Amino acid sequence: MDEMTWYEDVACLLTQSMTAPLIESLDLDHYTGVAKGHAVIADDLSPGQFTDLLAQHTITALLLRSGSLIDHTAGIANARGIQLVLVPPDFTPAQFVLIDGARERIATTVREPRMEEAMLTGTSEVVAPGADAVSFPVTVLVDGSDPDQLRTGLANGASGVGILRSEWFGWSDVTPPSTEQMLAHYQAAANAVSPYRLNIRLYDIGGDKIPRWCEPYADQLRSPLCRRGMHAYSILGAAIEAQFEAIARCARDYSLGVVVPMVTDLSDIQVAKQLLHKHCDRQAEPQIALGIMIEVPSAALLIDDLVHEIDFVRLGPGDLSQFTLGKLRSQIPPRDFSGHGFHPAVMKLFRSVTNACHTHGKQVTVCLAIEPRETLVEELVDCGVDAFTASPNGVQSMLHRVPM
Image (tube, rainbow, N blue to C red):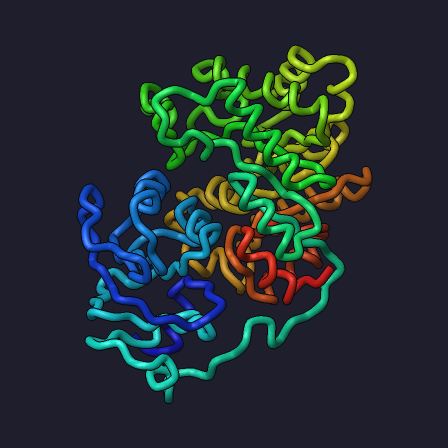
């Protein structure tokens, strides 16, 4: 495989070169021999498997023979600062691997570790992150799953919070988080980001994100086209009610936003508003900002009707790409989601959303769980995106491309 093929097809977006001992880990039920500083290679990893792996071991890099930059495993890797590389199915590892972050590819595999400088000689030019930075008039927000991640992102320069992801809290528990547990979690997060508003995304469960406490409903949740967002209320009603109660109580003391995932039409917004009204007192409810995820083509097409009911919009390119292109997130190749830009059909939906939101003075943010190349950022800014969200460790790299 020549260098140009690697650059076009190996979808690793890295910020620095590194070497790491390589562990072949194909039997994911037995995580043996993985130690700090090691790279793991596998045919595939679900978010749950990856989360379990990280709970037991500290790794430096993850090499996958299948997957995509927009699946949830990639998002977890980026949030944890783990270098992710998608390698060809026939990739044969040696004992050590050198990942060339400057050129976004694997530079070489070797039997013995040597100095990085020697290994890079004649392979590629090392380019400092942000060396070709271009200034765009947008802001960078931080996404995270816990208070520490949000605090880190703000310390790294983020100008506010994108979302706090709810589904990873209590992921391995056999019962859903209680109201009191979620309240303590939300209060800690809100305190960590104060005076910024904490935007809590409601449970986004389904597809490849099924917490242990949802396993009894796995058959109804496993498909990407399952009961997600407000559509899951019929089977996860008690957990969703507890979440709204925790949000309502937290809103008495902190500035909060609620983000509704997987919106398809106006009825999803109405259900969320009804639950807020049910659990909030008269003082707290008007102070909670309401946002929606645009991840389903129907929501993008109906944006003129939806925009009157909400305060802000967040574009979810992963799900919107898979539902628009008719491909699972893990099957969308780099050419449809990379520094070369999103698929034209997805970009057309993006533009219709930003046009409608700007007409009514509503902010549009886009979730980029990976570090984008400048061409992608420039394309999204031209499309009308107001702000980008990044992982805690990705904020500084984003600021090189979109300084505030």
